[in-house]
Image (cartoon, rainbow, N blue to C red):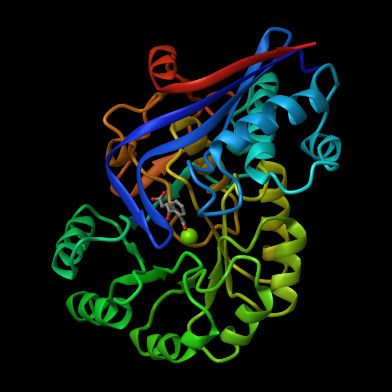
Length: 369
Ligand code: OSB
Ligand code: MG
């Protein structure tokens, strides 16, 4: 379909409480929303690279400029018939995965709407029901963490992701494992460690964790392979997997046993599907991660989570956990304890609420031919 108009919104969404990770402390989530218009149809995409280049090299203000000045100009007026073609048109722009993802996601929403089908069916999902895990950032104290995990277990969550905090590692895992001997648990290190920490990671083997997520630097597959060779616990790569080629290489060199696929980090649905298939062929299970997007990005994640090789509860969340009111509507809610159901309407089934969008927009632009 021919892309007639592009609308881009750089937004800041205030969190109910600050989200703390090994790379920082955030009070608002900065995200970029993209609307692609083709004739009477439109689609929405969203990729949240956040305010600072701390999770990856991208950040929302830069993402907005790349989206406005480079990506829009590469797509406007062109007849884009596939996700693959969209990626080819953008291949001259290196990196900038989140920026590309905003457009790729919007294209898939638009495409599914034109077919009159829910996105999860268009991409080959097996059932609309997907399982979510619990995840809550770094806590102030181990006691508070244990109370929070108890609440999550009582709410029906079957797996819990613990954000690793420098200096707290084994003490924290020991306390949580003693309190919950059978719970499916994994840790997310957000690239905070190096091979100097091999001994600490080896100690984790006795806690029967489902995986260790992104222990080392994002651009370092070789060190991950070196670490994995010394551990029984599988490594799951998040930040390191930015493209289908990276996924292929990580698998080939045995750098991981699982992959967290985030549509924003890999440039969109098109590449998320390719990574899913590469991993499936190698018997590497995947799951879907998120960046606390509004319901637009959240529903793209839910659609991806319906794919057959998604074999671990995903990081999708009910809107109310992080936002007083979601920027997009309808808000994401559980369909059953710890479950979500992909929406049964054409496309992703969500779009920004105009009032909330204007309230939370920092910068916006409409690009036409
Ligand atoms: O590493 O998965 C991560 C959020 C922001 C940046 C990085 C990460 C995360 C999460 C989000 O873990 C989890 C969630 O959506 O609940
Ligand atoms: Mg992670």
